[in-house]
Image (cartoon, rainbow, N blue to C red; front, side, top):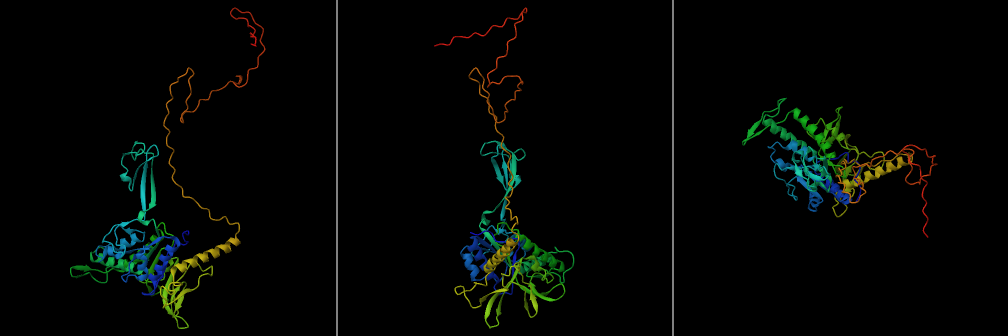
Length: 457
């Protein structure tokens, strides 16, 4: 199993016309993630056009989990579009879903990819209680030492974050597509206009009623609002924890204009003002298309760099130009099938392998140039250390012999007894001092010479 890929701090955008192969490329990406890392992928489908047999095969094999997101608010009358787009781009997943079709119940609860647990320790450093909210850390006896533990007098409360059980084997995510997401949110703005929830500039038309339903239309302010939400979705996705490869979005392509008014082809989201700006939100912007080569052959082509069509640029790019490894495009014969060479070059996994080759080449060049470089130091995230458990007092047993014994506990320090400088050491026999002459006094006794006993034979 390989290590996580680089550039997970950015996202990939596949922009192209309908039928150009965006979803098929996304399927090749998910297949590559499984082959490379043995991780499954989450596929969030927004497009009404659905997905083809290649993606369906991966769903049936369990390599891809699919969620048709708009089933959460089918008719758009619940006002869930904007919030749902925000939540799923954070990696949230339905609590209940049909794994084959991707349908989920309306207004289904969404599960977070990361769970936050609050762990309460007793005074003896045992785990006394664990809950997802600090409000649930109510007084409870420690299951290990039975000490009653409360949140306000326990040893410590530690907050831990861990991947949810349903997310532990996920390595990649894909959102198909960005254009449909922004259109869904614009419809949500129309519903809110019909309910008189939107203030500011008046819409170009009044709400209308049909078959008991009221329909409205957003204004220019709502277009700007949805455009800003679209940028938020990209930032949400690149912050999803545990991914081994970059998140991928798809979008339709639109002929717009840049800041100078010159025509361009770029990703389509709500309005046209952001068409030239959207590519800056992504690390790599690629475009699939079916083209006819100079020798009149039809090929499926994945454009990796900016290219021109009738002197109008398509805003594609990649972040690996310094290496010279990546070509301008990757081609497959348009008529090739899955068992005859299809998706060999026209493959997002192939692109990822080329990016790794490019990265290694640039690294080798600079490693040769900077031979004394310090290298990347691997830092271990700090784990909050628990304070040492207090050592219980040990009672000194009653002395059984005439000479009392000193029993030291971990909390008792032996007393330091000052020793006079002239005191003889207990390890060295004393040197006899010369005896002074006896002085006769009223109370003093004369000093007797030592008695030497004969040694027994």
